[in-house]
Image (cartoon, rainbow, N blue to C red):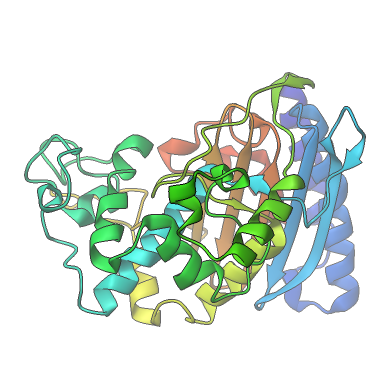
Length: 357
């Protein structure tokens, strides 16, 4: 941890010597900042014991930099690339939120409807869809924030009720296919689907999924600066986790959010607004996204964490800039209390934020 702290201090020191203006300073300044960021990002990867890392920076809805570091398969020495697929873990939550808010816009869902209308998986009978989306559904519902991925998974039933489709079919048709996210797969189990699962998709779509999954990054566990082979996480999918994607595909998703392709601007702002608790305090979570103010500017983000994979997306809406990271070990997030709601505990996020200031 000390060596990571030392490295991030170097990032901040060197970044301070680059002219201000972030990514609006022109191509030369942009290239200089991104080259610096890439150098320290790889150093952080090594310190965190991550064998393979794929990264992209999106500015004004286009990828301005992408790179792979290390190996998606360390034993076979297969390099990680921007096109490497990874299980993205809890970044799936942002997609579930988008699907639910599409239902709201279509008049098929009331966010203040009780969860018991859809499932018995949430203990507090008074908890609403909105409260589960905002991680505030513990009793008494709406009174406190607590990150709970298992509780969030209960929203799968809500998506299926309001779309009239299985969750993974709604995800594929309303987001993945619509945006041309051709290397994204709604569930690792589609590599070898059961007959019932295969019946949900066309044969050409199943073959595309199978091809993408043949390139899936291998799983590892971080051990300080080292790593060891690990198991894949659960292969199914629900509203909380299970999507497989690449940084390039996630950049398409990010651009679509900013272009209001998937949701109207007002609805997207609602998702990125901190939830107000019963006592008037604001939690660190909106509707499917972490959201906080840093230096007077909004930062919207989410992380994903399995024992063998991790992910991070950090958005600065006011700057039109986004960082996307996918890793085949837990080192992006496991050492840091991300669930508490301050993205600055992550040295990866701090390195990115420092290059925008």
